[in-house]
Every structure is written in structure tokens, then in C-alpha cells.
Image 1: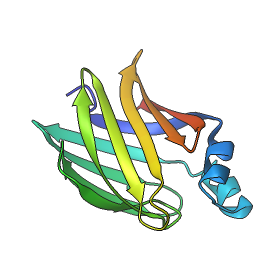
Image 2: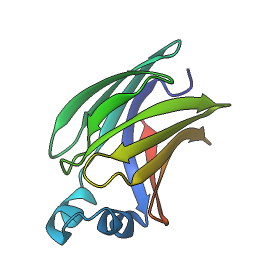
Image 3: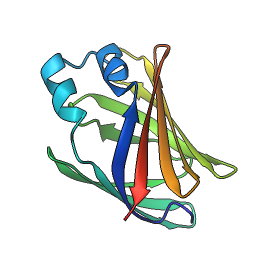
Image 4: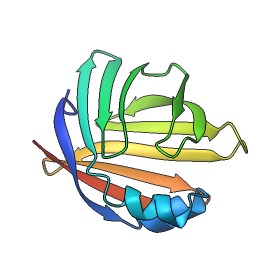
Length: 132
């Protein structure tokens, strides 16, 4: 249950290039770099409730590990996929509904920070969150 808590984005690595690879236009990319994203994570067994709150939207997400679900990214891209727990890491694999390409993401608590990584079509990015 190391993920439980309130997290606020602190820094990004290669996030603009990742979003560009995803096909997000420059205006949305520039805004997203400063979205002030806050995530609240509540884990109960294999069930997760996540609240994402940013400059652009607030969204509640409920999922169960290993069970496929649909999700809309902040830019409106529709994906479908699953989260799995591998050791102390959450691993997500999501397929875009518009082009069937795969987005992978991980979440892990490293040194007291929540580190979220992304990979899409060979481009990696990272967002690091500090606990509030």
C-alpha cells in the first residue's frame, strides 16, 4: 500500500518529446508541462481508486489489478488496458483505440517519491511526484 496518499507532480523528464510522439499538438504540450497534476491513490487489496486533479480536469478512476478497463487521457485519447503489480511496481499496458498502438507506463515509489514512467513508440518519459 506504499502508493496510498496524495502526490503532486514535482518534475518531468522528456515529457514534451513523449507527448509529441503521442501526437499531442504543441499548445496542449506546453500547457500539460505545467498542469500542476495532483494524484490521490487509495489501494485496498487489488482494487485502486485514483483521483487525478490538474489545471485542466478532475477525474476519478477505479480499477482492479489484471482487469481490463477503458480510460481517456487528458488530451482525449481513448485507451483500453490493464494494470498489474510486479513486486513493488505497478505496470500498465494500454492500447490506443484510434491506432491500436501500445502505451506502457509504470508507477513505483522510489526514495519517498512516486515515479511514473511512460513509453510510446520508443520514446520514454518520466514524471516524479512528491507526497503531500
